[in-house]
Image (tube, rainbow over all chains, first blue to last red; front, top):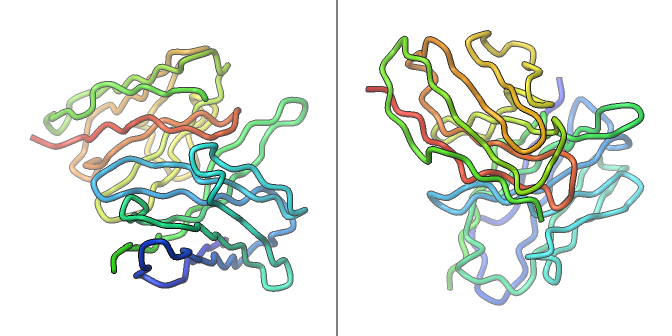
Length: 123
Length: 107
């Protein structure tokens, strides 16, 4: 059974860098795409970006200048760095498998999610 | 970016009612829409992919339909455990985009 677990500091100071790690168990990172999604308090879901095990990435343009997603296949982990954070970055952060389906035409869904981790930006 | 617009933003229905949530994409996305259920305090759960494909273990009272720009999630015979917020998401283009959510409450 595939499981994802987010970890990292729950409190980050403004202007600093938010760093989170997602540990994958029950599946190899060496397949599929792996996404970060966030949800501000009381609001909807926002996709941050994904990484492929090869290292290729794709980021939401709204966050692209501040986001870096990396992968460590030896540890079966992928990570999120979000720089220059403000209070607007306070959210629950989820990691998820962005599962590629199809044969001739590919499409994707987020079929497995971590439980989420709450990050508060405050001094 | 593909905008996904859901309606209504919230609804209240009785146990046993049929509930319909709609999702409109800002441009055609074929059938590449996914639906998620998020219960309070929990992570989202994939219910339906490719517009109408019910995921394993999801009750058959959930169904999806649509193609192009207009999609529907239907819950027939609403149950108390269906209290949740439901999100549509397009699964073809990047950036991945979600609808704003529909909160389903039980009368």
